[in-house]
Image 1 (cartoon, rainbow, N blue to C red):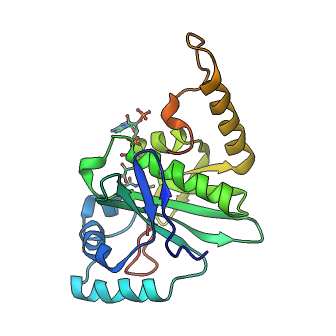
Image 2 (cartoon, rainbow, N blue to C red):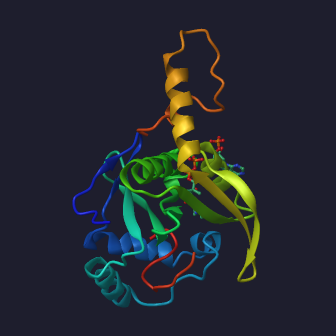
Length: 217
Ligand SMILES: CC(C)(COP(=O)(O)OP(=O)(O)OC[C@H]1O[C@@H](n2cnc3c(N)ncnc32)[C@H](O)[C@@H]1OP(=O)(O)O)[C@@H](O)C(=O)NCCC(=O)NCCS
């Protein structure tokens, strides 16, 4: 998909195409051992200069099988990346990846909001029917954020020496969730919502195959 000047607004975050000026922050996140471990990969071992070269190549010759976005906070600060990749047009499915690289934004709803915004883009703007992801079985924060936006557990997967949890969300489930949220939002005051999360859940809101790109783009 051509992302061009696409700007997808969530409640807390904005998804936008990646640009050359993102390279330095991406590099800092890619050499960070903790972030690499949470992505089941190794920290990048190349100079910033080399990385910038790969990064520019990637911008110039994007893969047709992946769509990458930078995640900005509302004030324009670049806080992370997300993507969908391994796009399978026949099976109408793709994997998603996300990383909030700037730790100051962890646990404040930014990751959930970015992913919710990405799902809205995928399910309203592409023919994909199923979105899935693999997360390390001990990454409880990520799993909570993913469940919060509609993913459910499929089961454990052992891959490359790591234990992952496979999670997915399908278009019909996502649509049903939107309808429930819309109905909940219209309910008169005092009537308890059946949804696990409050109104901020409404829409609106691994692997280094290429050295310049992690799972989350
Ligand atoms: C995973 C990630 C995208 C989540 O984004 P986020 O903005 O930090 O998460 P949110 O604030 O939206 O939600 C985090 C949830 O985990 C909970 N949580 C946070 N730390 C936790 C912990 N140590 N144990 C259990 N739950 C935890 C929060 O309370 C929240 O749950 P709730 O909404 O049910 O209260 C982000 O933290 C990140 O990029 N981390 C580093 C890289 C990574 O793990 N990537 C995922 C690879 S699959």
